[in-house]
Each structure stands twice: as C-alpha cells, then as structure tokens.
Amino acid sequence: MKTTRQAILSTFQKTATTNPLERFADFNVSQFDKLLRNKSEDYWNKQGEQKALRVFHESASNVPAYRDFLKKRRINPEKINSIEDFKKIPITTKENYINTYDIADRCIAGDMSHRLLVAASSGTSGAPKLWPRGTYQEFEAAAIHELLYTTLFQIQKYRTLILIGFPMGIYVSGMATTIPSWLVATKKYPVTLLTVGNNKDEILQVLPSLKGEYEQIIFVGHPFFIKDVLESARDRSIDFTNQKIRTLFCSEGFSEEWRDYIASLAPNVDPQRDILSTYGSSELLLMGYETPFSVALRREITNSSVLQEKITPQRGIPSVFQYNPLIRYIESIGNDLLFTSGSGIPLIRYNIHDSGAVFSSEKFLAHIENPSKVLQIAMKNRWNLPLVTLDGRSDQTIIFYAANIYPEHIHAALNQKSFLSKITGKFAIKKEYNKKMDEILRIYIELRPNKKPSSQLTASISQHIVDTLKAVNLEYLFLWDNLNKDIRPKIALCFYQDSKFFKPGKKPKYIISS
Image (cartoon, rainbow, N blue to C red; front, side, top):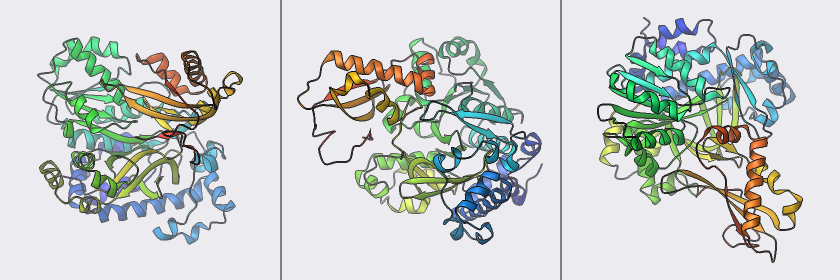
C-alpha cells in the first residue's frame, strides 16, 4: 500500500483516473490524517493553488465550453501562470456558463460517455440541472468519507451501522453518500450500510432488530429528517443505551440550540463531537465539513455578540466548516464564495451564490481573547486546514427542509389577478422554528393601501403558493409527497408600508435572515 507523502498528494493532484476502486484501495487514510495534522495551513493553501492552476489549464485546453468562454473574454491561458493571475480570471456562474453551453461541451473533450453518474439539482424554472461525475470524483468522495468516518467517528474501533437517510432518486445526496460509504466498507472496516432512504417507517421497523448487533449507529441525512427519526424512535421507546449515536448532516444549516436538542434525543451524545454536518452542493459534492474544532469556534460566536460582529458583521451566526484547498479551492469575493474543482464538469472560479467568507484558523482565533476549555482542547487536536463560513444564499434563496425556495416562485404565485387588487406584490420570507425545532416557512405580504387582512385572503394565498411550488419546484414537490410534515407556508398579511418589513424608501429584501 502506498504510504509516502508524495503518493498521497499526487493522488489528489490528478483529476483523472480509469479505476477509482484500485486508486482508493491504495489510499492510506492514516497517513493522510497525519499530513493534515503535521503540515501547516499555508502548505495546504499552496497545494490548493497549484491544483487550481492545473485545473484551469486542463480545462482551457480540453473543455470546449470553457475554451470558448475564455476566448470570448479575450483571456489568453498562456498568460495565467500564478495565483495572482488566476484571481483575475472571469467568474463563472449558472447564467454565463452552465446555462450558456451544452452539457457535453462542458465536459472534458466534449464527451459525456466517460461520466459515470449524472445527478440533478432543482432550479428556478423547475427543470433540474444535470451534473455529470467522473471517476476522480468517486475516488475523491470515498477518500474524504473514509477520513471523516475514521477520524471523527472511529469506525475502525466500533461495529458500526451507517444508516443513510438521504433520498435515493436522481437528486445528488443519496448516491453521493452511498457509493463512497460502500467503498469505505470494502476496506474491511466493521461497517454495515443500511440504505433505507428517507422512509422513516422502514427505518423504525428494522432498527429494533438490527441495533443490537452494533456498538455504534451513524445517522446520515438531512437534519430535519434525522431529527424526525430520532424523535420517533424515542416516542416508540427504541433504546440506544448500548450504542453510540452519531449524525452526519448536509444541505441545511441549524443553530447550536438545535444541535443540543438533537443530542438530547439519545443517551451519552456529545453535541460537539457526535452531531456534525457537512457543506456540499450538487455541482461540487463535498466542499467542507464540521469538526469538533469548527463546532467549538461556532459556539464561541454564538455566545458572543462582540465576536459575531468581528467575524461576520450584520450577517448573523454562520455555519463554520474546515476545508482542504487541495480538494476544493475556495475564494471569497465580497460576500460570495467561489469554487474551483476538477469535477465531472470542471468548474473554475464558479459562483454558486453561497454567501460566506474564507478564514485562516489563526485569523479566526485571533478574535477570541478567552477561548473556552472545549475550544482549547479542540485546538490541540485539529487538522491544520482553513475555515469557510456559510451565511446562506447570496442570490436571495432560502433553504427550507433542504429545498431551495426561490423568490421567483413566490412572485409567480402572488401575481394572480384575484390578488393584485389586494396586495402590492412585496413580500419577505423567513425560516423559523417551533418549540419542537420543526421548520416553519413564514411569508410576510404587504397589503395595498386601505386594505385589511382577512382569513379568507390568507387561506387563498397560502393554497396558491403551495400549488405553485408543487408545480414549478421539484424539490418542494418531493417534500410534499414524502415528508410527513405540514410544509404549507404560514402567511402574515401586513398593512401597507409596515414599519418592520415594508418601510418606505428601503430596497425590498426578500429573505429575512434573523
């Protein structure tokens, strides 16, 4: 088995492979973990810069769409030789790149036949966006999952049941978790996968007979779904006293109060070590991951308004992840995060409209005058990787039960003749939580002058928004058909020029973050 530092690094520097199984079999996760602890953040940043430049030049030469993209903007790839040059390259977006070029032209050599899988994400139009993946992505995902499972959850020490609760259809999360998890299990860890999907009743039916065989159960899925599973398990008196319970989430942020609540649903759960989330997307798969160190940092922010102002002024409490620049090179421009990755469709300086910032750990820690004992312990046992904070979406999108809710969809629902004589068309969306930590989508709507709220108008608008979302938003429709929750929006009709939400003279703000 390859164990040298250079073998580990070259494995991630290359973005093409014909046999991901063989490549992963040779991957030494223990050696990789040691490198992450022993090498400096600056070292990993330099590795990421080299990789980003390599992905750029490979794409400029071999991806027809990107070659044309650069030509139209008069960018000569031969003049891009340093990371300073790289940062002057035009940003790519869905609008100027993904929607402009055919899917095959965005692949290497303009050929989709070597893409192993195609996943999908919902878009503003309701038509899914397709995201091909190649062999490198499957190796890369397996290597990172092995790192997370072994280092954070110690699957090498405990007989482990990994319960994958993501949907198993065309959308990315289910297969993008199952394949790398299965590849990890092939390395003879004491691991069993339960790919039950997001069917709560099936999970609760098999858990009582299976759990006794395992010392540890890792629940993987969307936060709201795993919450529902654990609550229902408690209500049905399913006893986890003899198992370690851990969770790995993705797709949606949550508060530290919510994390503590999840930890309370099973015995002996440490919220800072056992309740962890990841940062991913359909385009780029896994981009970052919570660690005990990043969670400790976030809890420091949560408990200090002064620190919050220093880290993310006027943007609330962000999620905090560590990431490896060698695997996902991330820049922050203004409030937007840009990503470069040798994905199935190579992406260079791609703006997915996530709002956040990149920090070095030292810069982050410099703002904390009196770190807690928990943070001090985490600091001594951390990966030397930079941090990325995530505030939400910069393109006026709200994430509700992992579905992207676009203002365009709400506009479409409200622009009905029967409503226009009663409302101005202005609205604001806010995600809230009830006492059980279930999500609520609340929509504030401005009435026209001299109009008063009525229960009939409220009910009519609510029903039409639901009907519209089901018609144009595939992610919402999936939730409606599969999630055993009331996901109808709560409508609040506000008087004209309401001072809180629709104060005159201010630019309309569709998303209320806090």
